[in-house]
Image (cartoon, rainbow, N blue to C red):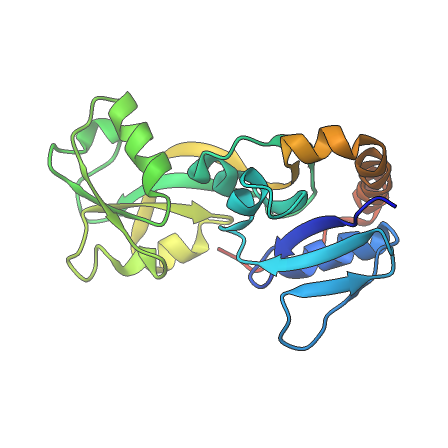
Length: 224
């Protein structure tokens, strides 16, 4: 008998609810078990691993999970070698460079050598500035990135933005986009070769769920 496929989905945050919803639309109900990170589902061939969205690419890369839902920006940030099987209709955002409104920085060309950049995407930010031959210092933070300039920790930020409202509330303006992101269904390469038929079957069910959602509109998400 084939072993169960393990699907990693975000355990919290803006991707959690929509990921539960789209799996339900695809005919897969998830049954959480208390504090356990592993959950049974209505599909006996599939189990769910609840994990931090940022960790999902690594679980996939190293084979701890076969499939996973996470943001494209996090796949890029982790540098994971995966198959991206399907774009999902939620989690839309951009990774952007933003500077204080009163800083005088109006474009990426205005960023001075030695500037400090606060971000939760240090790998992506470093590659971006290196590609521009900009000598900056990266300050890795996990939360409240937008307040770093106000606290004197950084000169600018590289942060995720959906509507731009959070940046504006913190006195920041976008000066340059880095990449666009949405939720992705990704797969471990070895797992795909070993279980292609079962994985393709789930992908087709999710594709149908995406098609139906296209008529109904995507699930609501928090502003960012």
